Image 1: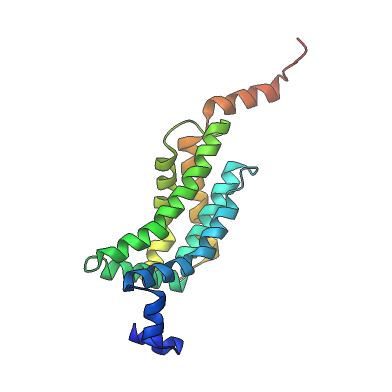
Image 2: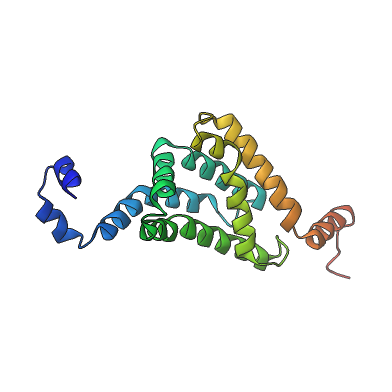
Length: 189
């Protein structure tokens, strides 16, 4: 709290008047850091777009966001301090990964309801996408083995979409569409 008040140019007492605990201050910092990222991710999940395009854009932006210097620093902080301060991990999870999974799960549920995706547990499908995004480039950047590359992020996102589509596309609906394209349905008969 002393270091924060010094950096902000205020007093520790003023800081304590806004945040009654270090955990509440940390929660506010995490929320401030990820709000625009989460809003950006939400904008990619446009229900009117093709599912593969929406999920691909989501995956590419998610990978890009997770590879940013501040995001990497936060992930490293949570990893290194989480065992000693589990409440920090819980705050981070609720405001970051949990919110992302909920956002993506809701989108997938809507696509399952529309019949675009086969019916299954949308939360499992969302977790699959997120897990696939956490590997590859993001993992190498986190470990300091690589730098962010938009080209590699797009490749990783394309692989994520390909695997997701193989697992969750509604094959029956795809076959009906393909059949109706070959033999148009006459609604008057």
